[in-house]
Length: 584
Image (cartoon, rainbow, N blue to C red; front, side, top):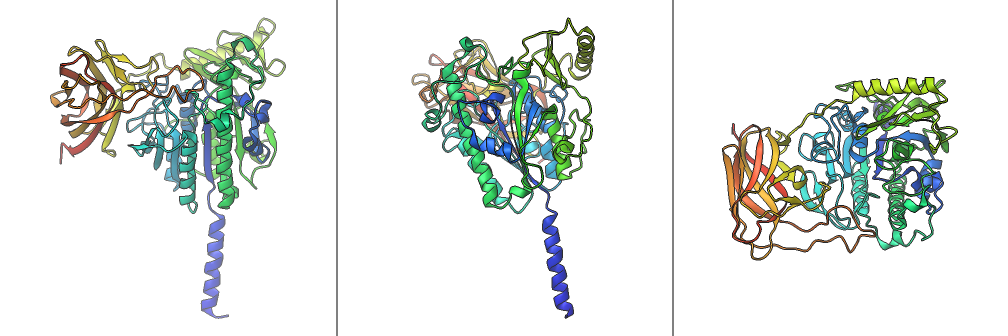
């Protein structure tokens, strides 16, 4: 054999060996407000979630998996491996949803290891850099950063911090974008985060899925509390999610990536309505079992066993260390994790599962879950093996256990829950990002200014009628310089001519509203049930001109210097684009 032929054979063998060492891809799919009981694999007889059920039987189903009672805290716990109270997340709007900038995220770990990373959907952990997903380890972002979105059919969305127009039903559009990302990056290890906006309200879903849900439904434990139209809409949205998950799994098969890809599916909290949930107490917002128990399905074809049910208690805080172990990545985080890797449960290497407790905290209420018991926020004790519906308080019969868990809970609150959370400004002018968006939800209106809805997310500001009124963002400018300001507004005919000023310290920009723009609000025609959030309308950009922003924290204020009509405008967004740095 010639030396040239021998060298070619060595190169071929080396190349083949290299292909087998590829790190696995990771896809994390997250539902929004879907309950544990919304899947047929968990006993729901009203619908058939065939793709999710198939994912459960072809992989592992975690039967005692816990998340936070609401949206943004669960996302923070997934992304940091730490209880949300440690990372600064203590609410769902007005900046309280943001993780501290010094937290190490799951995406950063994967990005630094050479993974291509993308998120498609509802972010809900901060809008402005360094809180924006493109600042937290994601190369690609398509979706929205708010806590909910007001319209699900071809809505305005973000693509890497710029506005674009969505196409079609939002979960379908997000899935399509994620699938294109997977196809484009199939030769590289990738991390895909696909956090859907459904079945969160507003309850909008195409007829195809609405018509697939029967009118007679499996009922909530207290049937008189159930809104059956809301339940039907939530289940229809779940069927749509199931279909989209099936599309993702089929793509992996088509690209021969199923054996190279870890896929996870779970929800961010309990159900957003009183509907069937295996009789569990509590729903979204509650620290009882029904508010924090989520399905977790995990598939890695050919590596983890099929049709396995794990009953050990696990939590969202465990996902970061688990995925790091499964992919062989180093976890060099700024702070110690609360989560533990459950990889040994998947590989069968866990001889003895150590005792642990999982804490659930929201709105001043804390409960603690052991493998067998739950102590609720009032001090009631429940045997979750014999009484999974939390109907019988056994604290009086088990005083020692109840007292022990109370002490553990109190110690955890003292250690993990700050007495007060720092009031952080909204950042403008991050060095790595020329554009900053300041939505109305992050502003405060003074005088007669009102929100379009009491829920800030996706709201706009209205009733701006006086020169005494002001719209103020508490901002910190990170990079001094000249910025081009653009305001997104609507104004009724007859109110043209209002003069407005944007000011920050000594810098100011002025403009006049020359054209009326008065589109109708919409969303009500697509709603299956009456919404509680704001309706939406299409806002027009108004260039305000350049404003110099000095570095530091000050109020960024929008005022009217003249109001010739009955009102100034309704306001949805402010865009600031850095044109020149102070040093340039």
